[in-house]
Length: 232
Image (cartoon, rainbow, N blue to C red; front, side, top):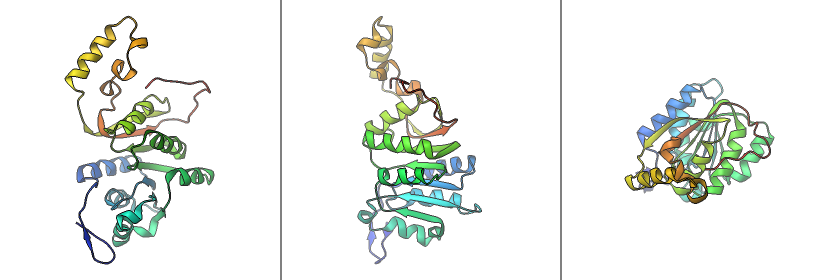
């Protein structure tokens, strides 16, 4: 259960579990992050894991974006305050597409980002595009719910970007036997690229994106040419 400011209790749901929280903390420690950003606050469980890792930094900064915090009774914000993390939290009660461009224009540089919000393909892809620019080289961005079709498609695309590297994953799953068999048959076809979808010729397992939570490291600046393309 979680409790709002008035003392009313609400069932805890849609929260990051302890194992995934520790997965995030390990990544934050690896990149020695001092500025972290999260899209999607909800009850603030994942935020608490992130902020706990930030708390001992000399100048910690946590940027939180959630236009729907009111729907969560502002409990996410309250939980951050209860733990004393509000002292370095910068909260935006707005959509990410309205906030991220402003951060980029202000030359904000982040070390770590966690995306756990909309599952709509174009919304998540837009977040990824901005976050890849906000991240310093060596920084990491993590996407939750990659088993959702929209987020999964974004993950497949990001796995193709030359300036990103998939470095960690949590909640791995195996490709079904039926799809594995179809994939093997498709690869034997002499005209496979014209007949079969790319996700049959190159499965999630082939790309390494067969997990619920995926972490991508920025290994360089985006120097793709204007006509760069990769099927996903």
